[in-house]
Length: 106
Image (cartoon, rainbow, N blue to C red):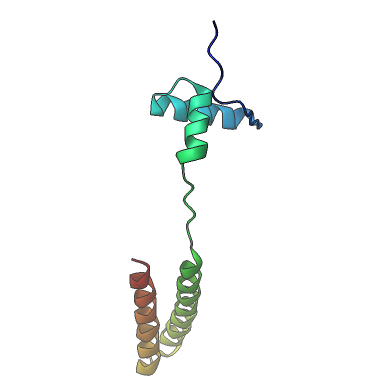
């Protein structure tokens, strides 16, 4: 006598050949040969990591500002051979701001 199926609801989806290869690789790494068991386990117990990089946008913006300021200071230094100390202090202030942003990410 055949045992009655416990799972009676079917779920179906499609994969590209590349996704199928990746699935096979991940199953092999996990040591699971039963595709249905692997997919069920991942669907029910797996998790997706969603990274929030919005803070990095602020860091990139500040780095671009510092780069622009530095180019202006370099142009003045190359033209006149002298650098305005207040411009260097402004760049240092901007660098400190970036360090604060980076430390808040940690």
